[in-house]
Amino acid sequence: MATEMQLLTVASLLRRGRALDQLSSVLSLVALLIGLAPLLGIQAQPLTALFCALLLVLGLGQKYWALRVALDAELFQQLASRVDQLAVHTAELDQTLAQLKLQSAKPSTRSWEERSLGALRLLRQQALWLLAQLLLAVLIVLGLPWFSITG
Image 1 (cartoon, one colour):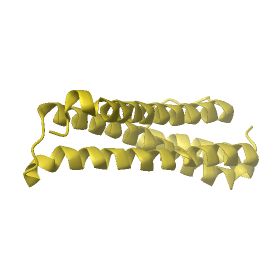
Image 2: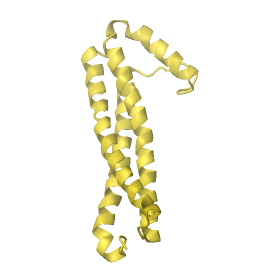
Image 3: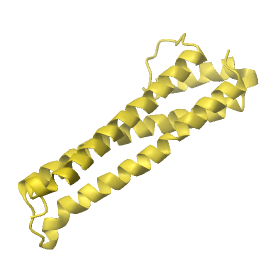
Image 4: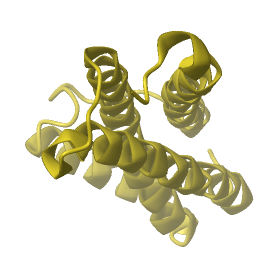
């Protein structure tokens, strides 16, 4: 059985995903602004549009994982405040997630340790999508002189 401190620790770690999401949102916004620059009469090359589209796709992928991480962070936080009735709340949570089609309808037998590890895997997935987005942004900036992206 998970303790209040374990659940709070996982919730705290999962809340770090918000900072990752904010950085990704900034990168996506910059890509969107550069990608839409031709609408303002600024000449752009096709390679620019491709790189911006890739940055946006990576940003959307990161956003998907960020939403899942944020949901888990809130759930862990709420359950930590009710650790004395964790078994009852776990059953209610599983039933609700099944009704919303967010998990399979069969009863889950996962322990809270397994659930915690699963939630932290989601955070790692989010970080990997952000890392891919950052690497592409760095490659674009370093490649500017060779690709003449800015026109």
